[in-house]
Image (cartoon, rainbow, N blue to C red; front, side, top):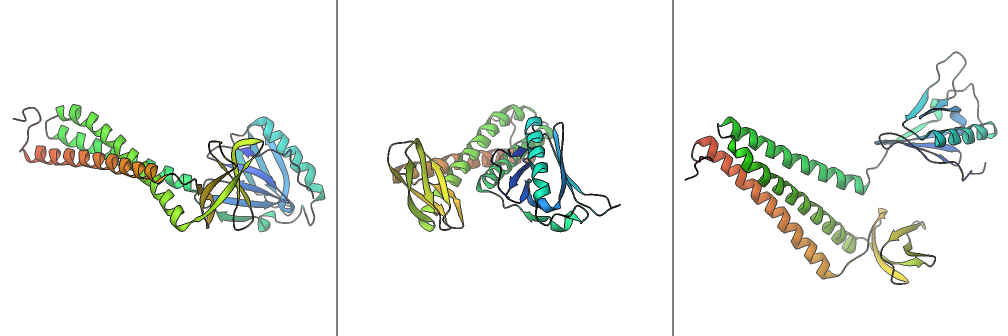
Amino acid sequence: MSITPSIPVVQGRAKTTLQYEGDALLLSRRHDEVRIPLAAVAQVRAEGRSLTVELTAPAGATSYAHRIDGVSEAAAVMFAAAVNAALPGTAGRDTAADGTALVETRDRPVSRRERKTRLIKRWAAATLGLLVLLCVLVAVAGQPIGILIYTPAGLVAAASSVAGVVALTDWHREWRLMRHGITAFAAEVPERPGQYLYVDPAGMIRNVFTWPGGMAVKVSYDPQDPGNVVLPRRAFSRRVELCGGLFFAGLGLATFASLIALTVGVLLGTFDLQDPA
C-alpha cells in the first residue's frame, strides 16, 4: 500500500499528534506513543474539532476508540477521508476481530528540549516558592515591610539564578558532545543557505541550521541520540558562557542566602527591618 503524502499530521491538545505512517497510525501523546495498525481500525470519524479512531471489535462487543480533541476541522476531515479510503485494501483486516490486540503502546522518551524546559520550570518554581515562603515568614514575624524589601531582591535573584542555570546547562551540553560525541562535517544545501546536512551512524540524513557562510560546518552529536547536535564554538565564546553562567547562578544563590540569613535574624529577634540600626 502506498503512502499518501497529502495526508496531514493532526495536532490536538496537550501535545497530542496523529499521523499516517505506512500501514499504521501513530498516536503520539505527552508520555507515550500508540501504534495502531490499519488492520485494527474500523473507521476514523471527524466530528468538528475532534477526531476519533474506532477500532474493530467482535459482533456485540463494545468497540474501543482513541479520541483527539482540539484539532483543526479541515485537517481532521482530510485525514479521516484519506484513512477511511485506504482501509478496504488493508491486508489481513477483519472488521469482526478485536482490534485492541494489534495495538502497541510504548513510553515516549523525553526529548532533550523537554528535559531542559522541565529543569528550568522546576528551578524557577523552587526559587519563587522560596521567595514567597520568606515573605510569609517576615510578615508573620510582625515585619511586613520585609515584603517590600524581599520582593525586588528575590525576583532579581530568581531571574539571575535561572539565567545561570540555562547558561551552565547549554555550556555543559556543548562540552559533553565535543568530548564524548561524534564530530563530523555537515554539508550546506545549495538551494537553502543556512541549512546543513549530516549523516548519523544509522545512515539517516539529519538537518542542522546556522548562519550561512560556508560549504560545510563542523558538528558534534550524541551517538545515542544523533538529533542532539551542536555546532562547536570558539573556546573564548564557551569560556564567556561558562563564566557568565557561574556569575549569574552565584549571584542568585548568594542573594537568596542573604535573604535567608536576614529572615533567620528577624525570626530570632536579632534584626529589625524597620529599624536596622
